[in-house]
Amino acid sequence: YDAGLLKWKNMANDEIKKSLETSKKLLELVGENGFDKENLEKLFLEKAGGDRGALLWPLRVSLSGKKASPGPFEIMEILGQKTSILRINLAIDKLRQGQTEKAGNAIIATAISLFCFVILLGFTFQFKID
Image 1 (cartoon, helix red, strand yellow):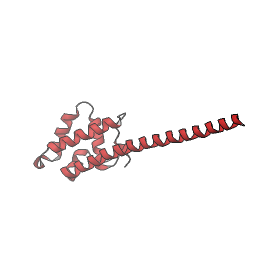
Image 2 (cartoon, helix red, strand yellow):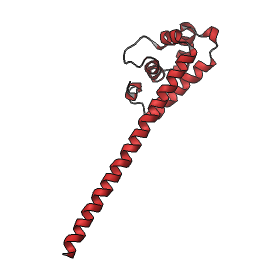
Image 3 (cartoon, one colour):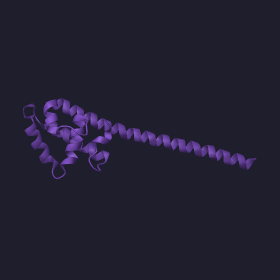
Image 4 (tube, one colour):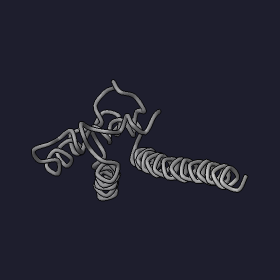
């Protein structure tokens, strides 16, 4: 899935990453015996506060890879703790990869602009000399 799907409303990538890391920490606190829909829902809704989407949307997408899917609590209960954490880590990596690609594209664009400038500058000097 595209990393842009992890975005809830106008969240920046850093906010999405922070949300996913919060979810991961919450999952790491839950014991195997308490890893069921009801306990997970209670834990996450208490942490989410007013804007539940900021915590739950990136989590659900990281777990399912889909825009429309069952809720994150149902998915986590089925996947289990280890797989849920693994998928969250993959989503965080996906965000990092997207940032790296953007930085790489910016460097390439700058290099191309500089190359074009040097060529134009060379033509300018050539015409002034002749």
